[in-house]
Image (cartoon, rainbow, N blue to C red):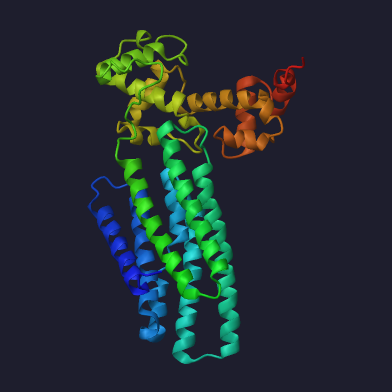
Length: 383
């Protein structure tokens, strides 16, 4: 590499600070902005530790303690980008914090060992154990981050699929290049460090572009449906035709009960979320999530579900859509080998218990019984 390593490190730190500034001046911040800011700060500290090297002596490890939110923060970032509602829960945060704590313990141990000159053999052994454990957890987190881009790909919109492909291709490229560099240049640590620094720079820029792409347009914006005429440019005209021709609805929605203009547009947005984007497949979906995404009150969402989507309640309506989706999976030929648990998870349920109870309450059969009774539908035709 022709570029000096110190220059490359300086560029990386500058890009990290620039990305931090962009997140800071973003007016409408999402969880992804905060997590990316945390990731950039951690990468900046990790790069600073490498840049300063041994000039700070043992104190370089104190800087390294701040570099505890790299792969773990990026995993949470991936979840927030591709899981629009409740991207992570307490146990996800606990895992990320545990990895951060492990990194801080390792750096703290190195600081103490260098500061007070601990027994060398014991120090090497403990350092190796901490390094191996950190590597194991970090590798697991990398796999989980990649999975976030794959999960739900089939049900994503065209734009969301393109965003996921950008994430998956860049992520795969970064991991593969780093692995090859460490193996091929095992006896040239300077070259390996150069390559990893370039890959880090690439991921910083790619992630910033991805975040801008994901949040540059309102999530509740109505998308033009392939069967709808593009000449309907006003929100009201678009929503009116959308609700009238939507094949999922049992009857033209706007004839069911008089609606004002705002309700017509809101009903169309809700139909887009439920029937085209299949939001009901997300775990723990609540009325508050839809209200927040569409920037309206929970009462308006619940009212339209009851009066115009013919649901007794929001939860009953969501469960009805989930069970209908599960029924289709149970009779498809290519999903016959899927366990009932997987069917339930793919249909938006968090565990098999609620899935089985809801399925039986709605259909009168357990999922297993339903699959057995409809087995002939799933079997391919024999000529």
